[in-house]
Image (cartoon, rainbow, N blue to C red):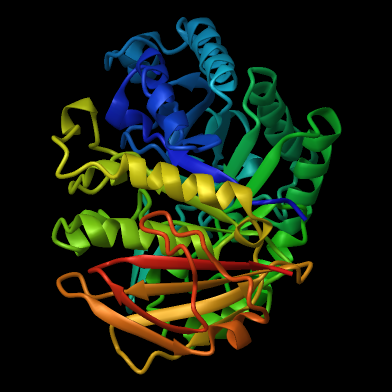
Length: 435
């Protein structure tokens, strides 16, 4: 089973040209990330949405020239390829790998593929190409800028699948070594098996991350997707309060089988700084909990600075860059460094909640898969006041007396069996034992 990864989502529209992406690599590496994930950078359809791809081999002009001239997409393809190759090379020189967004469940409705290969698409009763959509409560919302691919039953399925494979291999050839697979549970597992196996035959170091979020992705479906060859799945840990049972009920069905990735925010969510009213301590708290729970961690550019403006897949642009509300880069760097050193923090396994008889304090214990390491995580969810955490018999809880404090902030020189510790607002303590 793969060890966890630490992913920085460099949202490309917020930064601009690929040359400008490179200027962020030094600070990303200093925060001890090992992967850079970029959302779709291909030429979009009429809506301008990142996820409405019109040309899978063309680039959004912003990323090539820094401008919005869509008239030269075809002639700028060679330059775009060279720039992406440069991005991957520079990332590798910084000890980073590049992850691409793989969107193969739909295309832009005005993609040339709708005319060149109409048999690749789902059709309405009248023969027109179907637009995908989703339920919003009791209302069904149709995405009119998208065309639904028929990966399952297309009459030209062999050529369709070869198209996806050729495209994925093309970007591997430019240096991309990871793929975040959009709406992975809407794509047939047979296609994922075909795609992942063939890509790894050519590029064995390539990783695949499945987007497995939302009510439609049940634990059963998640397992089916993961078993089709994915290296990582996405976790809904962000929305869990470490108290209610809904998350553990799902997580218990696959914990220890599939490495998962947690995040405090992503491009679809509101900014976490907005949720916590700009409280720096709680931003650190959330990042630490995500990092210590799942084998892998990811966050979106600007999290370290407390950005408040939600990413918009159509409207976001470099002028949306914000003045920092705070800077927790050093805290993220320390948390990522700790995470990288211990197997128990690089693996997924079932956890056990610890009751502190205090609504503001939550905690859990977790073993590594080999049973040789164990951590105890304690968090103060009170963003304004300190709280006292008490454990009578921490050695018994941890299974040994050689418990050490490996927290990213203040560390206790000695951990007593009867622990009584004053947690600062938002503070997270991390205790470790190696058998």
